[in-house]
Image (tube, rainbow, N blue to C red; front, side):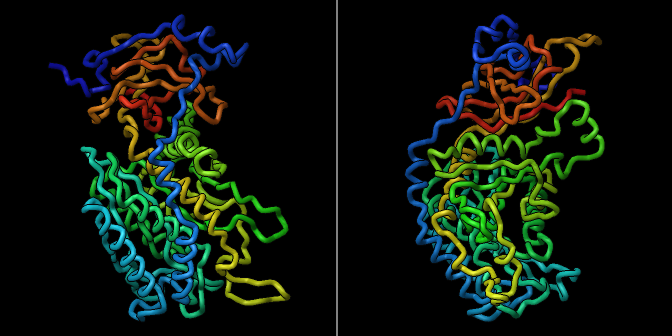
Amino acid sequence: MADKHSAGRLGATRRTFLSASAVTAATVPFLTGAARAAVTGPALVTHHPDPELRHLISQIDPDRIEAIIEKLVSFGTRHTSSSQTDPVRGIGAATAWVFAQMQGFAAASGGNMTVQQQSFVQPVSSRIPVPTTITNVIATLMGTATPARYYVVTGHLDSRVTDVLDFTSDAPGADDDGSGVAVVLELARVFATHQFPGTLVFATVAGEEQGLYGSAHMAAQMAAAGNDVQGMFSNDIVGASHSFDGHPPDPHTLRLFIEGIPTAATASQIALMQLVGGENDGATHQLARFVGEVAPFDLTKMNIRSIWRRDRYLRGSDHISFQQQGYPAARFTEQRENFDHEHQNTQVTDGVQFGDLIEFVDFDYTARVAAVNAAAMWALATNPGTPKGMLIHTTPPGTLSGTNLTTLSWNANPESNIAGYEVVMRATTAADWTSSIAVGNVTSVTLDISKDNVQFGLRAVDTAGRRSPVAFPQVAA
């Protein structure tokens, strides 16, 4: 019997054919002229927040976030090279405290959440003067799906001052990145009593200021274990709703940085991407589009400003470590940074306060950042996983000629509750998917729509109407 999961062998899959008459102008009356010709199909079906998610978000507590950041600041410095043994000052004391907090959350999980300290010795580098133990604290809320799929959220525990090698001066790190750690801890707390198909990983990583060392180790370990990480978010500098530099506050905007050309893409993959116009359709772009759908302002009180750049100009954070392993990963950060309050010694110069002090953190804003993360993680872990093995076929099966038809194929999702799939489309110049066609519970489809004119994607739909992130097709060999 033919293998129904072999999406590349079209004769072995259930197929459907949709002609242009089924999905043309009559179904998209809001488009005219060239726009109608560019995108063919009914309007995109959008996600609707789960009532249980609204309840979970209501539990995110700005007062707890404030208390977490106050505690982190109390360690004086969390520099990666600071004391590992002092019980009250330095990175060691901070790590022990975070570990204890995570263990407390796990105790309420009914055995579903486990916590580990992931330690390794980082060799000498330009920012590590002696071999140094770096420790990540990782809480894993195991999901029920088989095979397991993972969704990761991080904040970095370490802090610094002006001189990146200065590990003795006070480095409060309230915003960079006490705010991100507070988001991770608060998420771990409110999620601990739930369980989802997807596995959620809440991690504080260290060594970020020295070279993303903690996250690089974590991502490499997950890749070596074969973990299917389908989404990762770094929360780095997410605590200030205004920049204190004369610009008006923007307490309801959060930036989301998305890589363009995938960091791990090979030269041949980049060349093919250029041939098909897929520069804006890597897995991280699809992840960000999904976040925009499932974390609307009505739910989170936050506008998400997606920026098609790997990170801020010439800079980086821990999501890059996961991108280097080929995982879809993005960075959340506040709308406008103030550089007087990050990577600075705590001092007053010419009447200006320098230093990453807690007085510049807006705890309500940080709580809204946590809400955005919560909405994304909830939907990712609850909805179907991203379809795999999606291909676009440039010639009809059994022929050598080109065609204006578009044939797509994919692997069946492993979930038992899949109701079917939707092909999504947009004009090549559109930022987001704009239309969709339900194609049934099949593993291939042929559309009478030219692949030259639009971008295609695919998402799985379960029996409750929940939709996966979009998969973007590779070119069939």
